[in-house]
Image 1 (tube, one colour):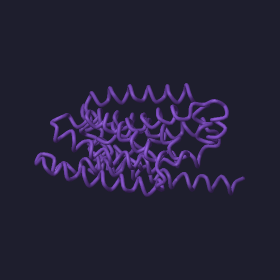
Image 2 (tube, rainbow, N blue to C red):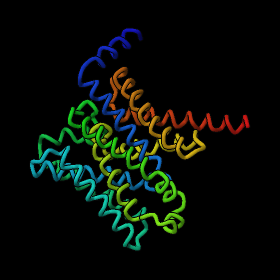
Image 3 (cartoon, helix red, strand yellow):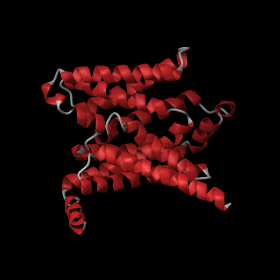
Image 4 (cartoon, rainbow, N blue to C red):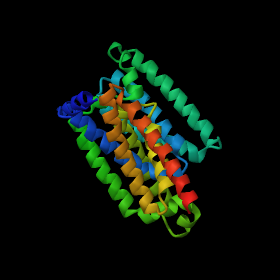
Length: 277
């Protein structure tokens, strides 16, 4: 085991591993921060729809000879706004509509990527993530996006809490519900889009949801809940990367598995609190 730990330490001295670690931490912070509101607003399945639509955006970018990493972001925003519009203006059940979106986007994305030979073997990386592919430009954008997310939540925290917990009261107090909801959806789409490379299409929803659920079991104040959720997102990314390097496992599934372990641990802690009180 000491030999394995030495190998891991040596790995993290390499620049691409350092970029991967920084990318995981930034994505974890953003996912935890927005995830804290996502689960309370019952948008968990919406984040999954965003993730799976990303594969379609990548496929379109590849066919048009665009950089898929950057064509994905505007596509994710437009797609998210379109889905939000249909959810508000149709009489279909939201879970049924989102299931249609998830399945059809995934199917169309894989079909489009199959037309390019160089991407046929890389579909697994898109589905389950390849955090080692994170580049310096991704880190710069993630840092800027994290700053925007933190500023948005910090400046509108009272409105966001009110909108999350009691939308009719938020409307009565003059909160611009439509604008706030749209801004949140756009930020969520960008976070999902930039995190796809590291976590993967199929795992991105869990990456957003699990830290927030774990934080909900540990916190009693809303402000603490947000901070704990972001912290658990970053912590799970660091531990997941260590596990991935130590046992030579894929990074995305390793991070999500660590998140699951943390979530199960928080269940035990919350039950211990109840018994102790």
